[in-house]
Structures are given as structure tokens and as C-alpha cells.
Length: 223
Image (cartoon, rainbow, N blue to C red; front, side, top):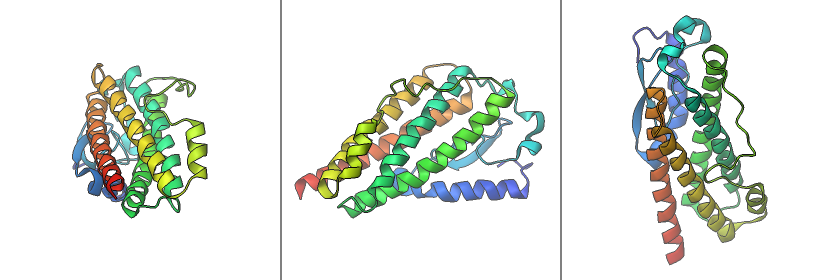
């Protein structure tokens, strides 16, 4: 952490880390992302750059284009917010519907972590739009990799037990693989190194969760 960080900034970071720590049992990953000054800070994978470190007043003029944030960065984070929100909606349905406790626990952790990430990303994006680049609203009619359709979500809401588990795993594996493709596409572009590091972290974490989902699927198929 930066030595200049105030106590309440540390408290905010600790609170976010506490929420994201649930991901450790799934990903076992850690990484580093800079705050808005470019100073590296620790986080539990995956946390957005600058998430919850300092208030806007304390940040002052630190948030500038010198960080190298580009329109590509803004588009990536904006699209990832929408992508996360779909996962949050699907994982919310798992409670009381899944027949497998391991899958229920994993879905619960995904829900908490991705909701926290989406909130932090939106805060970061709003600050950047206001103080760096105008950006543009992501067109939610555009097809995202691994997008969860409304019909799939509606169907999931009607299922229970093994049928729900099968749909959940199939959908979330495709959804996570889509997030990996989005992250890799961002890594192929020039832009803010902080966003690039975060994209790499998200790709790693999502790949590990895909492995975990496939392991659960294999176990369920053998039972």
C-alpha cells in the first residue's frame, strides 16, 4: 500500500479485500493493481484498478490521462460490468434451487465477489468518464462473449435440482470463457498498464473457476 494512504482509505481497502477474500477458496490468486496515482496496491483477484483506496477529494488532480487510460480501457471495463451483472443475476438463482452443496457454495461466492467487483468497476468508470475521458455507454444490444440470454435466465428461474445444476454449469462455463476472451482481447491492445494487469488477473481467475465447475460437473455425472 502507498504510505500516503489515510486510515479510512486503508479501512475501505480492507473492507473490499474482506468481501473479495471469498474468491481465494476458488482462485487461490493474488495480484496488484495501481490506485489512481499509479501506485501499486495489493488486492485479492480480481479487483479493479483504484478500487476503494482514496476518496475523490484526497485523489485531487492525481486522476489524469498520464495513467494512459484509453477508450479501449473504458469499453473493456464497461462491458465487463454488464458481463458481471449477468453472472450476479444467475448466481442469485442458485440459492434454494441447486441440488449440490459444493455448487451452491461456489455460486454463493461468485455472487458476492462479482457483485462487489461490478460496483467497484462502476465507481472507477464513473470517475474516469468525469475526469479523464468521456467514453460512451456500452450498447447492451451488442452481443458479448459468453452472454447469458434473458431466456436462459428465465428458464433457470423455473428449474430446480439436477436440471438447474446442469443449466447453471453449462451457462457459467460459457460465460466465464467469454470473460476470458474479453480479457485476452483487451490484452492484445495498447492502453493503461493497470487495466492490462487487471485483465490478466481476471482471465486467470475465471479460468480457475471454469476448471472448478468442470470438476463438479464430472463428479455429478459419475454419481
